[in-house]
Image (cartoon, rainbow over all chains, first blue to last red):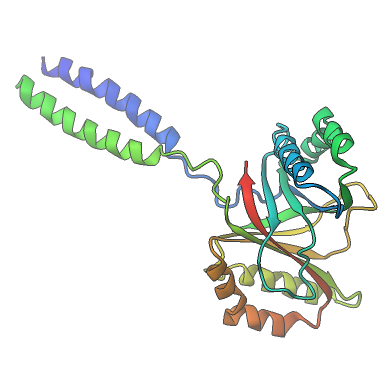
Length: 138
Length: 138
């Protein structure tokens, strides 16, 4: 009976420990290092209505669902101090991270991306794009 | 003996399950939402030597250790296609995330930040700064 008890409790215990060992894996310290970071600042026409702006924001949210994107953020200008070097003039910014250049190209050529450009490019007066290789993250 | 066995195996089992339930907590889906994102692109003088550039990069790495910063990344221009809208001309970019405006101000006024500016501002010809409130992250 003692041997049977050990088996009865021991096996589930091992299974639980195995499951735990999978879920307790720590994320790597710098998960975005070596990723491609693609940032776009959008400057809208002054005559864009609040409805058009709202639709544009929804369009950006949909754009960021394209699966090739590893992770993303959507931002608006922050109320930091005015400085000559600081640009508060954009309406929206998207930050996107790609694991590989191929993923970036998949995103760039994705029908949803092209549709987004077609649908909304009349709203913006300018875009500024910065692409970076992340060499370290903290 | 049977009751003792149950106790013997049952208590450690409960403890392990409790430990597991802590470690299997999923991170929130959008950890940077509502954070302040502060991005700086650095454009260096054309006569900056490779030694000076290396020292500058080390200076940036030290700068990003200021504790008020929630998370950060250091990047260099990526080899994406040349486009009118894409700026590949900067030498380095830092992305920093702050949980609050107060943390951002703590960073801005931090002696290590001021020392960084004093030590290296002779190297750059221009900086471009963008501050954003993250309204969603994916």
